[in-house]
Image (cartoon, rainbow, N blue to C red; front, top):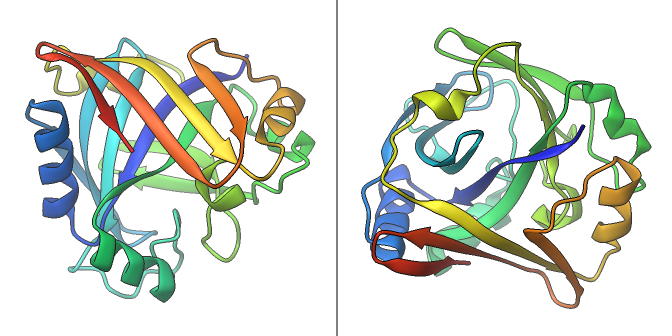
Amino acid sequence: MVELDHITVAAATLDEAARYVEERLGIDSGPGGAHARMGTHNRLLRLGPALFLEMIAPDPDNPTPPQHWFGLGDAINLSSLQRNGPRLATWVVRTGDIALGARSPIALGPAARVARGNLEWSITVPEDGSMPADGAMPTLIQWPDGPHPASRMHDAGATLVGLQVRSPEDVAGACAAIGFHDPRVTFETGALQLTAKIATPHGVRTLF
């Protein structure tokens, strides 16, 4: 089974990412950690029993990591984040078999082993550190057995209502090829844009 796992807001700095989310949603974000292999750090917010929002940015304490992900090693992408501010950059789906990524007609990249603290997982990462379909196509993740990491994250009473994915590429077809179907996720053809509707104690808010 392939299921929606998390959505990712990227920014030039983690403070900017957290501030964007907190201002848009009206709730505090929670702590996260660092990814030594990828040179990033994050903050996390639970959106359900097995679903969360990630805020991610380059880690200034690790400027030359062995690998990059989510386009955060790309100078052009970073310049855009610096000019235009944080954005909902991509999304991630989970599976019990990371090899399913090979079925996607949109290349997801090979599986990499990543760790944060004592948690390790496998995730597809293009070799150039980019995002499949510029972020419109989800990354594939495989967590270890046991409770989902969201169960230990900060819970501010937020839940995901829906995610709209707009792309000039056939992302819907590629998602179907890896077995992903979720009524909360809708697809449109057009200029790239990801939009998430999130229910909060203050009403439904939007991230884009």
